[in-house]
Image 1 (spheres, helix red, strand yellow):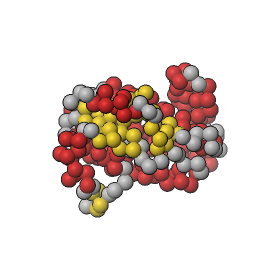
Image 2: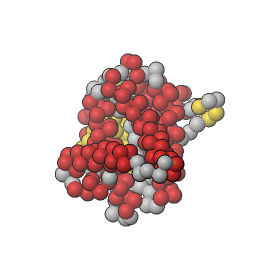
Image 3: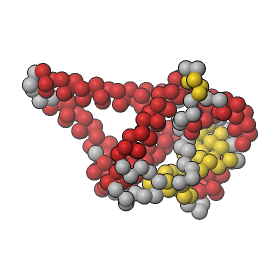
Image 4: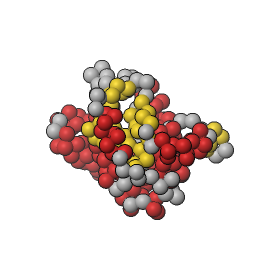
Length: 232
């Protein structure tokens, strides 16, 4: 087994043990732990990112694992089966997109390659890894842009996989890619209505607010932490 850990990440003492237990199943090619922000209390942004990580791990990844395929085993803490890595190494070392070298989002790319090779990928919620997150808006936005590029690029790679996976994962991948675009279009349409017609787009605002509050309320209930209401 090979453990991948980012240089700014600190692992809990039992992380290796818990990931290894999941890897006992020979059908599992990779498993990731739960990420938290080690500098959570530093700024308002790091507090929000810590909650974002909780949602990404304990909603998105946990749901994907329930249906047999975590779509991205995150770089800060992931374990891989060495024999599977050996099979995929040539593809992994030479990432191209539209004929050009592409070296961002290597964790998502490797996860997709694992799934293409027929392995399952898993999430282990009690294997805790604390990683440093951006504490100001500029670095955070640059990080998110890199991750968004990776998501869109590797979605194209994953399209051929989806028919062989559970139908939930197809809905999840479609939602991840279309959701932000639809939100942007809704916001632009609301702004256009306000500027052109002079009427306030109440329904657009209320719908977005309601969806946000429902999601954050569920997270607050599951995590038993009221701070998630502030994430909205």
